[in-house]
Image (cartoon, rainbow, N blue to C red; front, side, top):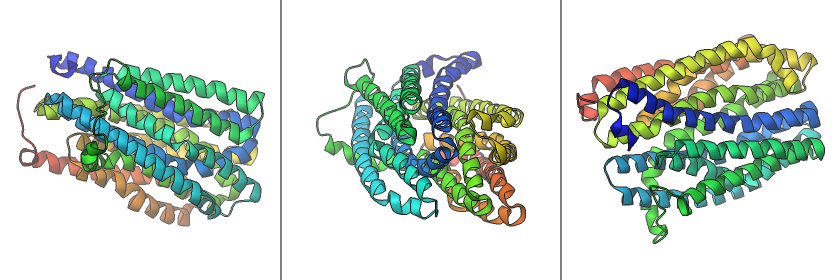
Amino acid sequence: MLALKAKNYKEMSLLFFRFVIPALTSQLLNGVYTIVDGFFVGIGAGEIGLAAIGVSYPFTLFATAAGAGIGIGGGALMSISRGRGRVKLAGRILSSMVMLMLISSLLISVSFCISLPRLIGLFGLSEELERLSLTYGRILLLFSFAQIFTMGLLGAVRNDGYPRKAMCIMVSGFVLNIVLDWLWVIVYPFGVAGAAWATALSQLMTAILMFLHFAVGRSNIRIRWKNMWGSLAFGKKITTMGASPFGVQMAAALTMIMHNKQSLVYGGEIGLAAYSVISYVIPVGIMLQEGVAEGIQPLISYYHGAWLPARRKLTAKMGFSFAFGIGLLCSLSLVLLARYIPGFFSMGGTTAAVTVKGLILAAPMFPFVGIVRVGASYYQSIGQPGYSSLLTYSDPMLILPLFLWLLPMFWGLDGVWLAMTFANAVLSAILITVWAFASKWGSILLPVQKNI
């Protein structure tokens, strides 16, 4: 692998960007899927259409979470196996990933399609808003298998040594999504249903192209079709390794659900519509940093498998620095551009003013997000999911709910927007503590070599 051919800091830096830039681009495009929906729905269906997507979209993220958990968890095991020269074992792991994707697709599609009306009913929405939310959510959940296979095989293709190919496939899906959105929302005014079908079919195409890479392409790792069910023996290891990336996406879903509820409580449907736009914009910055975290994962896992801890730690430090820099840039850009964003979604008046203020108050969160995402990815990549899960699950389960309950008591709707910044600042402090502890006891936890 190229990871072993890099002989100095310059070559390692070039290798770092060779993996990070495609992963970053893929994640960015994944986030832009929803923004494109929002842009066209804002024109074709107005604020109520935007609010409808904002309510139902978080429930579809559970499919994204399953795919990311399988893809990144299994991909890390694939890279570790390749680093140790066990290519056939990597093929068995890939087969196990495919079986897990099939099972999770069935479970998520059936369970959420049945429970979605009751879940959306908990928000107490108007009849029209509830109807549109159900329309959008049901279509995407029906095609949840496409999102699961896209995210799952995306991690596999990257860890097979083809980060650029993975990026190109995601770009093709993005282009198709734009064309179909224009066709089914503007040319033929199908509203939120047209936007949902555009997203679902573009994800289906990317899933097929990812699968063809291993089925008929020149992949380094092949799916082992024989004894496919037997390959599920690796299922436990994959799910353990994938607990953190699964949690990252699940945290995004729970974050949006909790923010939707609090926005409705403290701001009514104006607050809900404002958060729908905020929830389109904020994930773009988060996914940029998640792209850095996912980009370094194959390298760190490979170095860990090849017993090269000095290279592993250097790659992690480059990841921290790059993600923090992206975070600062995102915060500055959002503050400067906040006033123009509501107009992009065809939003005006009071709702636009509330949205601008919310974007500015949430902007400082990004540097903290970068630190946490890279830290969680590092520990997940070296087979220490305990540390990674601590960072990932403490946010939606404890820290964010605490701030979403506490801050609005003092600052109302402004407290809802500030909760994201406060929560990620606390998570960064936890990461720094965990990193200091692990560095101190690293010689016990992991073998250490001085040379690169």
